[in-house]
Image 1 (cartoon, rainbow, N blue to C red):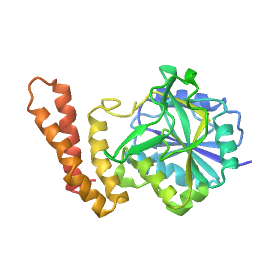
Image 2: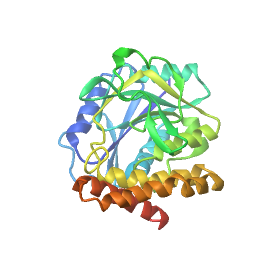
Image 3: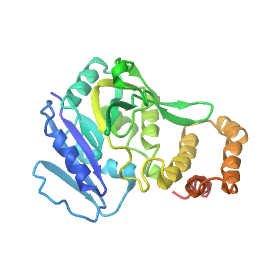
Image 4: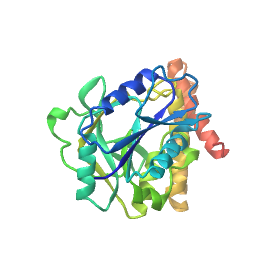
Length: 297
């Protein structure tokens, strides 16, 4: 039986983290440890956590490096697989059973993604694997926002990336490609990690029986697709392209699609008919783009 380390990154919102931990108590697979990474949170846990290994970071290291600390602890303690799990999730009791069964069927797979639902709409799919549009170079979720009653996402399939909200990874894949890149801080880091694993010869697989319900970006200031999300999405998208596209491909993007995107955001900020919130989102994206070119990470 494989030993599994479940790494949960905590940054504020103890109520979410405690609900996640409670859902883990119902897991049917017995051979796991929970590593809770307190990522510079200022508030202590309101209750004792006797069955949890606590890793404390002195400051907020971001999603990438914060999780890296937990991954290293899980491997140090003998984990053969690591599950990255957002603290704003609850899990199906058969989550680990589904992941382990898939890992046994697919020894060439290094990373596995869950079927992730909206917490507030439990039959609505948020993520059934991730892909990238190679004309716009934007990432998107398969399955969103289909109802699971339609039974469209019931088969295991190869995917481009698995969402870091619930990502199951084989120890050998981590040892071959290393940790997540800390400079991403938030967003695109798991996509970069999955790309590196695929480049190293590992498959990335969607596992429909591994089910998770997600509250969506509770740790982001402003929530999902708010100002903080906009900043990191647009900054790190360019960082991802730098790491994975050839120089010729990047120049094609910079000279074709990218100028139009930037011009549209700049022009919209000058349009008084647009809402102040929309203009603020555009400014956040433009700040992210600026910081990328200033190498401000």
